[in-house]
Amino acid sequence: MGWNISHGITQIRRSYTSIAQLGEQLAHVLPSKDWRVVAPLFARRSEEWITINHRDAGTMARTLRAAAGHHLMPADWAALARELAAAAQNASNARQSWEWR
Image 1 (cartoon, rainbow, N blue to C red):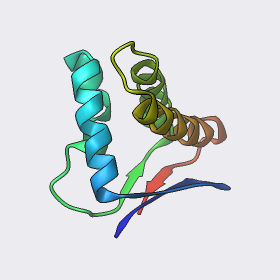
Image 2: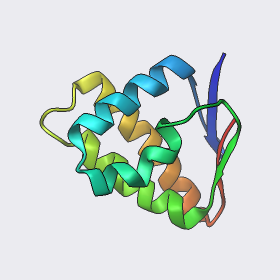
Image 3: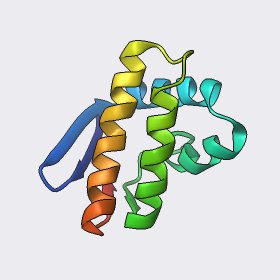
């Protein structure tokens, strides 16, 4: 089982474990105020679907890109963070919700 993260034609499929592990990496490289921006995605207690409005998706995209560019972020996790940032930015640009199912 895992997450299907999408906006329009952008579709990302990752296991719950890999998303949780990315969250751990983000928590290590982001300042606490930035971590709070993306924590609703990664610090979860259930696998319930998430719908993020386009404004929040834009803010999350910026935060994910910043984390991906951090010098302590491992390259493989940075790639996933950039992929999620692109999907969030697509939703924001289209003024549509960003879906995690």
